[in-house]
Image (cartoon, rainbow, N blue to C red; front, side):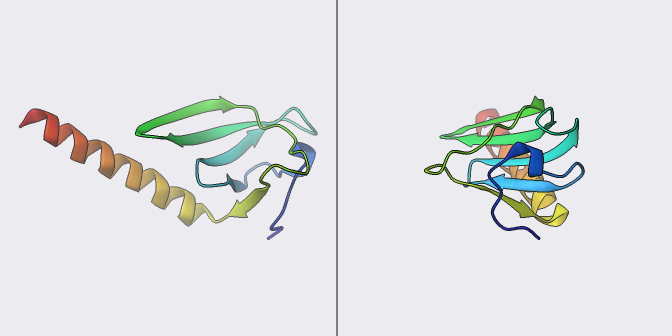
Length: 93
């Protein structure tokens, strides 16, 4: 796995990446800089999921994209679902 990627053109279709702790994504299409993906954002107490995320090149001071496994991506999805169910149950009470 390439551990530090700054350029979108270097992100591979079908691979999973993480940028810091707030974003997991699967690159799903395009070529060169025209790639999109599925992203999960964790911001404060909000979770946003999009199928049309467009990654951008990192500048030197920014965090880099790091490749992760599909399992880690799926674990994060499951944790997100579990958290949603937990919060929904609290609201019902």
